[in-house]
Length: 350
Ligand code: ATP
Image (cartoon, rainbow, N blue to C red; front, side):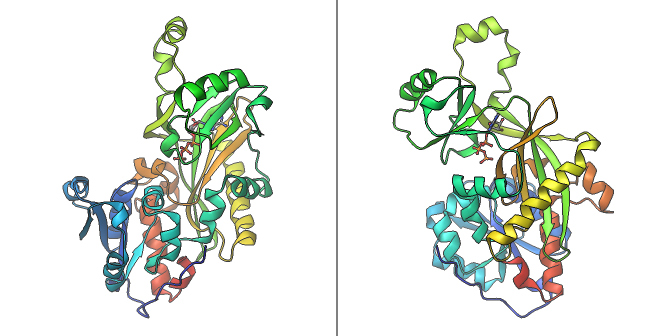
C-alpha cells in the first residue's frame, strides 16, 4: 500500500496549525492536550455523537460527517486548508480504514508504515519476537490445542466474541454454535495472570522513551463472573467474554519498571529496522503478568490507547517527570508543537 506525502506548511508558529482527531476513543484528552499546549484543535464527529465534545467544552471547532464512510476528499481539503495535523487513535483507523489512511494527504502524526506491521498478525508477531519479548504460544489449528487457549476473531473490536476453550472438541462446540460464519481466528495460549497495559511515549525529537502510565481493562463478562459462586457459574453455562467497557488505572511494582522500559526500547529499536522512521509517539504493550512475574505480550497498539483516558490530569509517573499535568494527549501535542517550532515537522509526520 503506497503512502502519500503530506504537504508541509513552512510556518514555525504552532498557532498556524490545528490538532485534529475523530470524535471517539481518546478524543477528549487529545483535544484538551492541544489546548493545554496553546494550540487550536478540531474534532470530526458523526452527527449525533458530538455531545461530549460540546458538553466538556474541549473543542474549538466541530466538523460533521453523516457517517465515517463519508470520509472523502472534500473533508480532507477542509483539513488541509486549516493546516490540520491528524492524531490517529484506534477508532480512527477502524472507521476510516487502512487504505484511506495510507492515501491521506492531510498531515498525520505518527508512522503510517508501522500500521501494516501491527494490523497483520504474523508480521506483528515477527516484530515482537525480534524484540526479544515473551509471547503466548500460537496454535495452527484447533486439533493442536493441548491447554487453555483464547480464541480471537480477527477484526473483533474490543475483544468482542473472544472465548476460552481447552480442547478441539470444545472449540468446535462453541464456534459452530455461536459463530458459524467466522473462520478467521487465532488460537493463542491462555496465559494465567493479570492483564496489564503499558502506555509508552517515544519522541523522535528527544529520542527518549517514557512510560506514561499503566491500566487494566474492565471487561464484560470476564470481570463479573467472579461475582457469582462457582456452582452458579457452571449452572448458567457462561462462556467468558472480554468486551471492553472501561479502563482502570494501575501502578506497578517499582522493581518491574526497568524491565518495562527495556521492553519498550527494544520494540522501538526493532521498528526502526522494519520501517524508515520506525515507531514513535504513543504506543502500548498489552501484557499478562504471571504469578512468577513473567511478562507475556499478547499485542502491541502502535498509537494512543483508551487506557490512557483515566490520566487526563497526568499519572503518578508523569507527575514525577513533569511539573504540569501531562496526559498522553498533551504529550502528543507537545511533540507536535516542538517539532513545528524547531522546523522538524516532517520528523513527526507519517
Ligand atoms: P484491542 O484491539 O482493543 O487491544 P482486542 O479486541 O484485540 O483489543 P485483546 O486485547 O487481544 O482484544 O484481548 C482482550 C482481552 O483478552 C485482554 O484484555 C485480556 O484480558 C484477554 N487476553 C487476550 N489475550 C490473552 C492471552 N493470551 N492470555 C490471557 N488473556 C488474554
